[in-house]
Every structure is written in C-alpha cells, then in structure tokens.
Amino acid sequence: MRTPLVLLSARLLDPLTGEPLPQTALAVSEGRIAALGDDREIRALADASTEVIDLGGAVVTPGLVDGHLHPVSGAEMTQGLDLSGCAGLDDVREALAAAARELRRGEWLRGWGLDPNAFGDLPVESAALGPVLDGVPALLQLFDAHSMLASPRALELAGVDGPRRFDQAAEVVCDAAGRPTGLLLEDAACELVERAAPQPTREERRAQLATVLREMAASGLTGGHAMDAGGDSLAFYRELEAAGELPLRLRVAPWCQPGVDADGVRALVEQQGVGGALWRVDGVKLFMDGTIDNGTAWLERPDCHGESTHAFWPDPAAFSRVIAELHRAGVPTATHAIGDAAVRHVLEAVALAGGGQDSGVRHRVEHIETVPDDTLRRFAELGVVASMQPTHCCDFTRADHSDNWSRRLGEERAARAWRCRDLWDSGATVVLGSDWPIAPYPPLQVMAGARHRRPSRDLTQPPHGPEQALTAVESLRAMTVNAAYAAGEEDRAGRLAVEHRADLTVFAESPLTTGATELPDLPVLLTVLDGRPTHRATAL
View 1 (tube, rainbow, N blue to C red):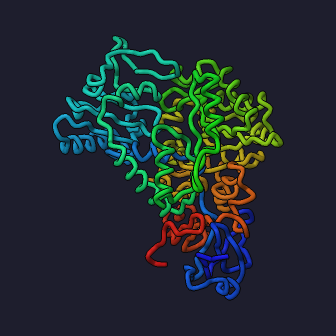
View 2 (cartoon, rainbow, N blue to C red):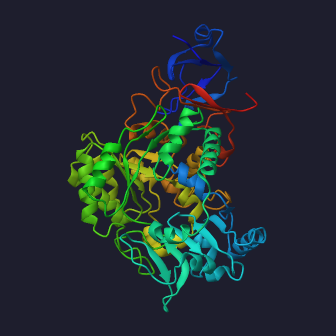
View 3 (cartoon, rainbow, N blue to C red):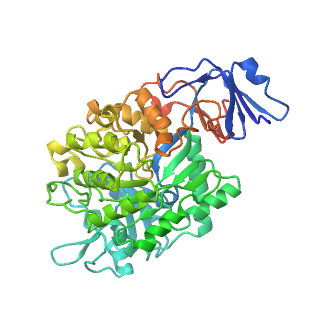
C-alpha cells in the first residue's frame, strides 16, 4: 500500500479531549490516516515517492470545517466595493464617492458588506447616500445578504417604480407616496434590480470561485457545509474537482423555497448523493424567516418598529409538511431560523415529522440568534444540531445594546443573543461556522469569536454576553468532531485516528493554548485534504 504523505515531529491534538496524543507522527494512504506512531515507526513506512514533512513540533488537528458558508454565491457577491469596514455614513459616502470616480460611463457600482448600524438613527435608504450616487446605477448588498440598497438610477434601469407583490416574504420598501426608498428585502425583491445589472461571464465566476477556495484552504479550512446549490454551483464543483482544483470537501444543501410542490420535493430527494469524491449533495436548506436587522425575522412579539411578525413561508404549516416529507425520505434539513418564533416552529416541525435522537435523520437549525429558555432543551431532546455563527454577534451587535439588532429586539431578547454556552450545556450539538460572505471565513477568527465575543475590529470593546462564550476545546470541537457528527460522518472524520480521513490542519502553536484575541493571527503552516497538501507555508 503506497504512502504518499508522512508527517513527522508533530504534536497531534485530540479535539474531543483537548489532550495531545502519545504519537508524534502519522502516515497517509488512499486519503486516510494509515498509521500513527513515533517518528521512527512512521518514517519506515515512507518510500522514494513519499512526501515527508518534518513539522518541527507544529500542532496537528483534524481539518477544520466551516458549518455554514456560501462558496459560489459568496465569490460572486464579494466582487466590488467592500463596505464592511465602514463604521458610519461618512465612511460609506467617502468609499462610494471614490469608487464612483473610477467608473466608466454607464458602469454599475457594486458593493457588499454594508452594515445598517452605519446609518445610525436614519432609515436605511438610498437618500441617506445622496448626492454621492446621483445618476450612478448602484447596488449595495447589506451585510446580512437578505437585503440591498439600490440607487435611484438602478431602480429606473430595472423598471422598479413602486411596490410589488411576492409569493414569499419579500418587499420593495416604499415611502408614504408609494415611491421606492431603494431598500429591497429578501431575494425576490433584490432580483428585480440584479437582473438589470451587468453580469460576469461564467469563466470569470469560476475563476473567482477557485481563488476563494484556495484562500479558504490557506486559512486552515479543509471542508465546509455549503448552504446553497443554485445556478452553476454543482457544475463548478464538478469541473474544479476534475481539474484537481477543489481544495475543500463540500457538503451541499440545495434550497427549498415556499410554494414548492410535490414534484419539487421529489426532485430534491432524487438529487441527494449527487457529487464526486470531494463534494456531494447531502441535505436541503430551507428558510423559516429573514433577519432581525431588516425586520423580516419571525418573532413571538414584534420588534420595536412593529416588524418581524411573519414567517418567510406564508403558510408555516406548508413548511412543516415539507419537513415531514423530507424526513420520511431520510433527507436531513438545515433551516435558517433567526427569531424565537421561527426556531420554535422548526423544532416543532421536526418533532411532528418523527425526528428525534434515534430517528436516523440529523436535522439542523441555522443561526438561532435569540431563543427563550424553554426552547433550548428541545434541541437535545430532538437531536437537532445547533448551527451557530458567533462572529455575527461579535461584529454586528454591541455589548451596550446600542446596535440596530439589539434596539429592534429590546433588552430582554437582546440579552438572549447567540446562546452558544446555554445550547452546549443543554446537551445540543453545536457546530460553528461563518456564514461567509456575511462574516469572514477564516476558521481561527470564528473560533476566537466564540471565545471572546468581542468586535474583531476593536478587541478592546467589551464582549456581548460573555457568559455565552465557549472554551478553547469546545470551539475546536465544534469545527471538527461536531461538524463531522452533523454530516453523519463521525465514524470517518473529525478525529486523528487510523482509517479516518486525512483532512488535517497544522498550526505553529496549539489553538487551545493561544489566547482568544491572539488566535486569528496564529500561523497556519499546512492544510491537507484527502491526504494532499492544499496549502503549505513557506516557513515549513
């Protein structure tokens, strides 16, 4: 049996216990860990064709997996002006003005990562950005990717001059006179204007995706749970894998939208298992609500503006029927549910479908931004995975609750923000992710956020809900062991064990002893996928 890769002089870390393994080396064969042992034993397994890497005492963990990301749509969305660093309207206007000066005649200005907190007490509408965008067709993605700001010229080119009706909870926001303010809520509304904007070529989109995936591998990621499969996504994965350019192992969940009929559900079931060696369709992504920041979440009580009172599915009972159909077919589901009413409904839908610890189908809830005490225990009771993105709390809310998210919810619900610790302690399986491009994808930044819960732009700020922090071991486990469990792969992934996948991340020092605020700067020396290095630092 050929041994293509051997790693020596390593500190092998068990994410389940947080303790080092007694061995110091490992050998890889056929994409699996073939042997663990001391340097002498493992070196003896190498031959002339083996790549032998002396790690010099570096720390090896199972490959880090992002529990929720959007590789293809994110690669497309993050083209254009990055507004994520703009703290106020002056910053936004200055960035837009500079970008507008560089535009050719008739060219569209695209931006992403716009934080509604930058608007302060002003409404989120294009008038707040005037006169910078006068005459400029512009589309600015808000950070939540559930809403956009369109300039007056963009609305004109798209023929959007008033309110529209949609089959889902979407809206072209208009003023009292029925004129669009520029704010577009949810995909159906955003697409009205996006269709009018110039689109990149297929070749450009694929090249950008390949670049993003390489950068993800360099950050230490070996895999991700991709929460969409629209357009050319699956074709891109297939083509990149065939070309040897797919550096992440991807578990893909196509969307199921309101209004889906029996044929649509059947098609989703039949699509399961489609894929290659490094990617496959496994699960379905649904939406129970939108976001708190734009007033489209589903809350048990309205927010301070009287919004967030409805489900994304006009008929929540129809959602429950779809969950039951998918459950009977053995298809795991991942449902976006941010508000307390949305989370509760998803859990009850799983219960009605016959879900539970022993059902054999592992359903998930994504985001879980605010939930009351009586909802926590239901995750463990039903075996529903809690998929969390702690950097959303870090970067888009504030400890003093002066941010848009907290003001909308009020003190009581804002105090229940991203209850990672309470969910963990209640027995739920917590998986961590970034939701990239909503937040940065580097996994060390995600794990750090779970530990310190501070704004990454200013770590001197106080944490939001420090009592909800995870420990270093827990945050590592959430991106290794727990990610494997959520995918039903705990027998072959997430641990450093013989016959487990040779998906590995190598650090200069232990992520468990590195301080939370220093963790994002910990050097990633080597990333290995399926026994093949996908990133190797020059220092190694």
